[in-house]
Length: 489
Image 1: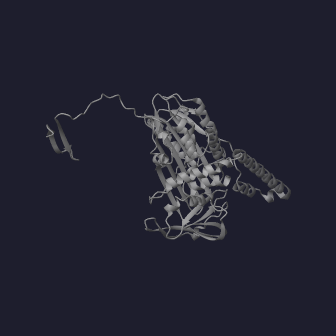
Image 2: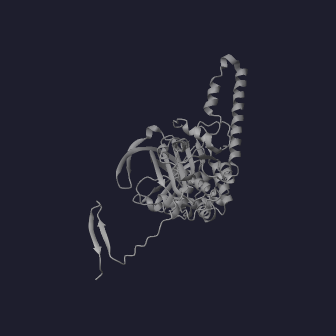
Image 3: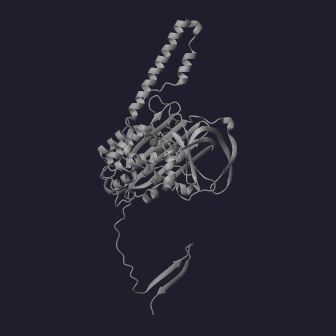
C-alpha cells in the first residue's frame, strides 16, 4: 500500500507535480517569495483556526557529524581524550537519529487502510485518463494526490447528493472513510529531510460576512491540517494573502499561476490545497554524460534538447502492448515511473488504457510481469507545467451538483441566505528534473460563490398577432433589413 501511495505521488512526479506546508521544526523549507507583510497581517487578524502541524525533531545530517569530527584535534587532545570525544559525538548523533526515526514512524502511524488501495487506483484512473487522455499536443501536468485532498476537504463542506457524488469519485463509502484516508495520506506523504521534501498545505478562506458551523471548521483544521481564515472577500489585501500563501506553499514554483487566483465580493469560500516535492535521485546522473540530442514532438517537430544518460545494470522493466514502463528511484523511497510508447505508437491512446495506466501507476517492483535487463537511460532535462480549469472534467466524471446552485448542498459549512455553488476548480502543477533530482509542485483552488439570482421581472407578452415591424442588423449595427407586417395575405 505504501508503495502505491508513493506512486500516487510519483504520478505527481512522472505526470505531475508535488508538495508543501509551512516547514516543521528542523526543516529549511523551500525558498519563500518576497512579501510586503500585508498578507501575514491579514492572516493573523482573521484566523479562525491555525493548523497545528506534527512536530518532527531536526534530522541529524552526515555533513554535520563530519564537520564536528574534523574539528577534533588529535595532537592537542591525545589518543584517550580524542577517542572519548569521537564516541560522544557518535552517541549524540545516533540518539538524535533514533529520535527522528521514531518521530517519523509515529507520524506515519499505520498508514492508509489497504482496503482503500483499489479505490485510490480507480480514482487515479478516472481522473488521469480524463485530464491527460485528450487530443491536445501540449504538455499537461496534474497531481492526483493534491486534487484528492482538495476534493476530500470539499466533501466535508457538502451534504446529500452533492457529497455522494464526491465520495463516489474518491471511492469511499462514507465521509469517515474519506476523512481517515485523507488524514493518513497526509501523514504518509509528509517528509522533511536534507534532500527530500514532500510537504502538504491546506487552507480554507471564508467570507467574514457569513456565520460558519464550528464543527466543520474545527474538523478541517484537525483532520486535514487546514488553517481557516475569515476574510473580506474581494479586498486587495485578501487576494495578496491568498497568492502569497499559494506561492510560498509551492516553493515559489507556481508563483505565476497563483496570481490568477482571486476572490470577489460574491465569494463565500475559497478552498486551497498545495503540494511541494524535492528529492535527489538515488543514483544521480553524471553531468559529464549530458549531451544534446533530438526530441521528436507530438506534431513531428525535431527539437534539440539536453539529454541525461546512464546505464543501470539488472534493472526491472515491464512490457505492455505498444509500450515499456521503467522507473528511476529517489533516495528515500519515492520513484518516478516512465511510460515510453513503442516507435510509431501514439501516447494519447495509452493514457486512456486502464492496463497502461495501471502499469504506470504501480511501476516495476510490484508488477508480476516485471523483467530484468540492463537499461540504458536517455532522459531529457525538462521543466513542464500546466494551469488547468477542471470544472468540465469533474462534471464529465460525475461530480455535477456542486456546480449547480439549485442542487448544491453546503449545509455542513453554513446556512447560507442565498444558494451557493462552486464556480471554479483551478489546478496548477509544475515538474522540473535535472542530473541531481526532481523539484515539483501543485495546487488546487476551489472557489465557491453565491449564485446570481434573477430579479423578479414583469411578464411581457410578445404575441405577434397584429401588425408589427422588424429590423435585421448586421455585425456593424447597420440594419440589413427593416420592414413592417400589416397583412398575411
